[in-house]
Length: 241
Ligand SMILES: [Fe+2]
Ligand SMILES: [Fe+2]
Image (cartoon, rainbow, N blue to C red; front, side):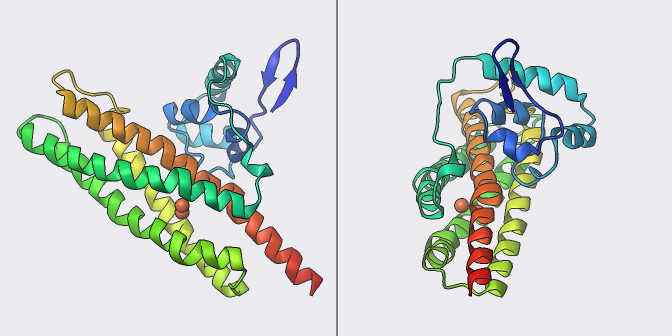
């Protein structure tokens, strides 16, 4: 993105979406609304992702430019300026703790809503199953990061082969996570509660939407900021020995 004082921010459709996301805190929401995945496909350009999704790139560009002209209520430190250690601390403190809390709330609400609204013409059972699948996938995933992976990265104890294996395992989990949220977004009609929704159903949809937003940003940070920094540091150390 470049800033032009006369016409405002200008986005380049050829820029990788993972980089666009880092430019302004309003961008991830616009991309999610257009079902453009930046968490695991962020290496692709906006043009490529729009073509894959069958969306005119001009529509997304207009929405992005409108969103970034709004006052930024959520300014943040650019994670690219953070050290790997600071990034890992931020990921655990902000994203992992949120994920644990909200996954637990969401699964509880999903069970309740499925029970209370049994017989409704809405895929509540599948939504509950997806919430449980996310929990089964992500709780061990973040536990592994906190207990095994991040300490090993901090202490630089992994061989190149071990690092490659860890990166591959993470990639598989991250792709499964993004795929589960894609289905969840479709089933909940973009997290729009049905007209019969009670407070618990509205709460469930609200928690799931927040969970998607936070988790996709968390995965994007690991895939496109943390792991590349770690790999570059590893290469630099290998070149100097
Ligand atoms: Fe994580
Ligand atoms: Fe992760």
